[in-house]
Length: 139
Image 1: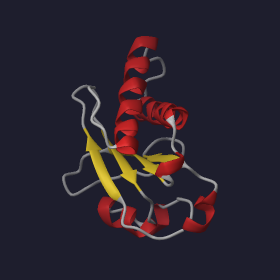
Image 2: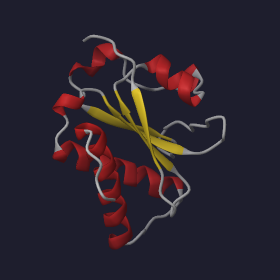
Image 3: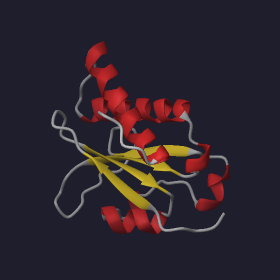
């Protein structure tokens, strides 16, 4: 696997106190540098493990995730597209569901309601698909 510099895409929405990053490419040092993550808190797959991983989600939550604090102290959840060429619409929806689960856990929301969850998953899916395809989607 050739190493390329990952590209971060920022997506903001006005409803929830989190931003979404979709990272095209994967490099542990890049993630540490951009988000100020201390290595002791880092539980990310090594590049050698990524041959079988298409994409994954990282973020702060009760499930052992990481609190990402950029210099502006914003809170975020990150979707990492390890192999963008292998990402399909199903992978986008799958990862969007993980993002949604992390968001609700972070907000201590046990029952967000079907519509609220569905709209959020739709928005995240579109964000991931936009990075995958390079085409702007009306969100």
